[in-house]
Image 1: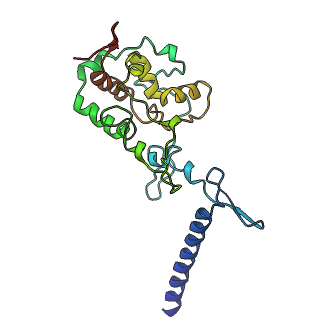
Image 2: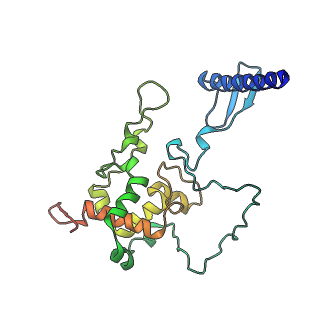
Image 3: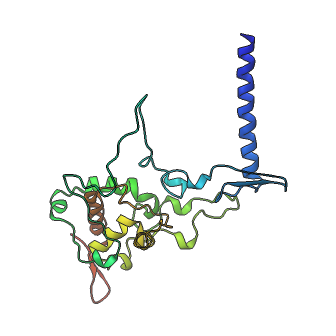
Length: 239
């Protein structure tokens, strides 16, 4: 019994020491969060997990469970369909050039079944943290302080969320808004067209939301920002 107690205490001590070491190397400035490389002095060098690359997206505040494979007790890995397989119910046709989306409109079945409360929930869960309650690009993430502890913000000016209630967005077609939601903004669409990983903070919602849910977001945005700009520069609000 005494041996078991000693072993438990030893394990707890080892866990504490390892945790203390990780805190030390991260806070002491010798941990490279991009590569995971750790240098202690000039003699010791090893690697730790690359923390910012964990989760579903590059930014920790967007940690997602959508891509996590979950297995039950003694369950074998699931057999996934081969790449390019199309379900019997059909599959989304994805484009990576904005010109292919310009003439797309909100499908009639989405318009007929549209529920603003449901669309608001989709927006609140997926968009509000960045684009804000009022769609003005002033969500909670804008005020998030960086981990540097110097009072600076986590986001720089180049990565600030887009103000959705602006002429820039209002003048887009429904199809263009759908494309940017699908691929994670202009940067995400451009990256997809080049076959590269998106550098944008905004997720590519083609992986997270259904086609219908993305069109619901387009309708939700239109209902609040208006349809277009007329000659005198004023907006025509959606009814």
